[in-house]
Image 1 (cartoon, rainbow, N blue to C red):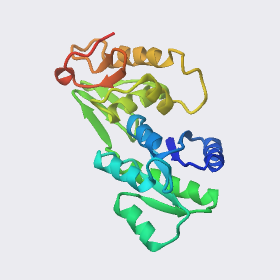
Image 2 (cartoon, rainbow, N blue to C red):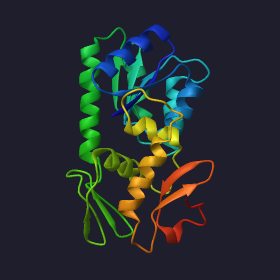
Image 3 (cartoon, rainbow, N blue to C red):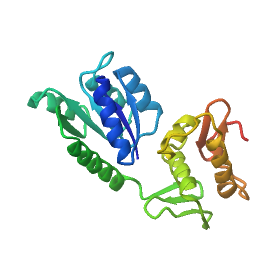
Image 4 (cartoon, rainbow, N blue to C red):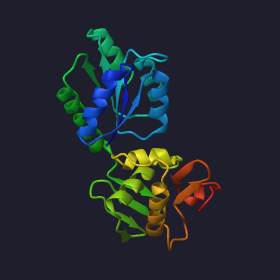
Length: 232
């Protein structure tokens, strides 16, 4: 699971990030509202831990902007203010949960797990794009009724593309979603796995679903709706 922490207290953000990484999460950090908004819009994450008191754009404004754009990523808001009106305002603009500073890290972990469980339960059980079917519960994939065997990494890549159907994902965004460990960002690992996936998903089928957009990244889209993306 990939998380985004938006917190301007750098020491606190570092502590939270380190703790979450130890729990097996991939974690990104932004230190102001504008950076947080950009990352939340352009990087596929599973949940956001969002401080209210941020420079450049506060957490309430950031969350309003996300929800206005139709981004439904679950959000836990952090605040040093423990008044009912503050919590109501955050919940009214789309927060999923609230945690008042100072907080116990174990409580934050429990709230993150609860959010991710709810998100998982709400996910579409079967994703259908053209003639491909992806069962997000069993991780079974078929195309044209034919079962396709994927490695764990190939499945994560396919699911990432499918949940972002019709959206171009950069190599960096894909990499950060499917890898929890540190590795060389300049490597061609994404290109390698895209080729693996193409050989299993598109090879032998007239309609191609995985598209390369030159200079931008990759996308999963029905070829009949894809315009003219640059194909490898």
